[in-house]
Image 1 (spheres, rainbow, N blue to C red):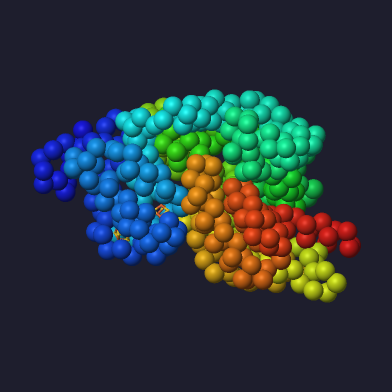
Image 2 (cartoon, protein in one colour):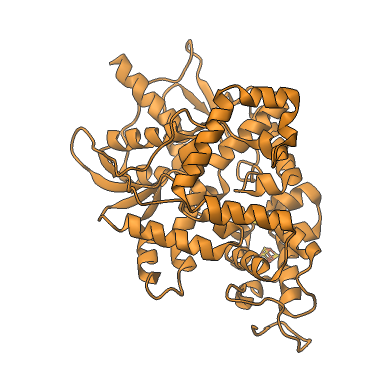
Length: 446
Ligand code: SF4
Ligand code: SF4
């Protein structure tokens, strides 16, 4: 039980267990409301309970013993995308991401979810994500399902709806022809070595955007960076941590810490915004672990987002034009929440894009508002996720861009699905893929 700085009731907190949200964090909120207009779920609903201020008020009510953690309260917390847009604009410095992560962890230890949800969560968070080999095997089966024509038949005949989890099938992203396997590969630059780094493969990205990870290694090598991909690494634990599964997230963090500290390098490069933000916070996740706290802090310090790293290092300006028949490719940029808000990195991706010849950069409205992907959110909170995806597709269309560039696999998948639903023509690409393409076109023209 924790103390309650704001309590007038004399009752004890209804948050229990090892991962309780810090009262000190929650009582920083002075209910000013500056965060409301930054919050995607508030923008969509206009409801106080779907705003950061409302969610913190519910935390305080539980903390002060005025209510138990009820299904209705969990519903409002579950609707939070953990996009952290509120954290950036809060004048009182409420560490909202930390608060919500701890709140979710507490929910999972004291609140009984339904049987199906518990089973699905246990399978995903404990059975699949921490096990790279199992993840690869499942990816292989799904790839066969897509490529063999089974998917087309199952969708046409409606058989897909009869399969377990069939309702979610429409959210299945396209699997890569060849997965990115982390096998201890070493990619050396041709000339002088300017830096040595390790690279995170991650979980989803390795299976859905393997070619982008290959592009990351090429772009780094092109810029004089030697890249080592440790074999013993695994999923970073972001999906677990954001869903309240802190114990398994800690195990996954420990595994990666061992893998990435195996060699002395200048940086650990991450090309997926959600993973980068979690690894930069390994120190908080493992703060109470006597054996790992210092090592976690070292990994957090060494972790760099790919755009941040290239911008700091200084990159070779690509020369291949992306224009078609003399017409520039019009590109806009969607700030992934865990890059723009959690890591506060907004300029470097734009800097890279603007350096590419034959590319006209345009800003779109609400580029810093979440697209509705948010890790597993798009599968669990389908209604709100679809609304936010539609909102994003509308802004992309209004920008008249040919391409929307971004920096996170979940955002790529979510925006592709939203644009397809809306019948819009814009393509979704990673910033690094556009850069890699420009380098290659430049080489071909030489
Ligand atoms: S801006 Fe900060 S202090 Fe104000 S209501 Fe939002 S979270 Fe609370
Ligand atoms: S993290 Fe995002 S969705 Fe959650 S309360 Fe803050 S702004 Fe709203």
